[in-house]
Image (cartoon, rainbow, N blue to C red; front, side, top):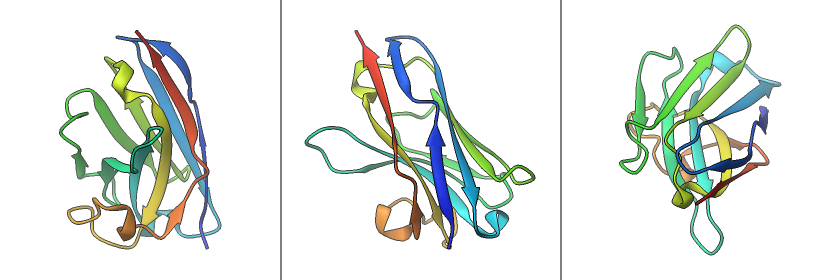
Length: 125
């Protein structure tokens, strides 16, 4: 059983940056593909980005590619989401999640086994 706790959310102006972190415990962190998802009010949860177990490979949704970066530190059991050039449409609750699937296919929430509680990101215009 893996426990995930996100932090770093908040209010930021459009064009600004924010860095989210997710701390894992209770399992072998380096075994898992890690992903970030977000959910805006009234919308379905959507994929943001994913990173392979060794941190070498990453994948992103088209809406965030070039602006967001996922990274991980297996020695510290953490995964991060660096968000730059934020837009009001990035406003959502952001979740980190752990998957036993390969990073190439782990793009759907159903592919993930463990979830954090989420952290709110609000981007003002």
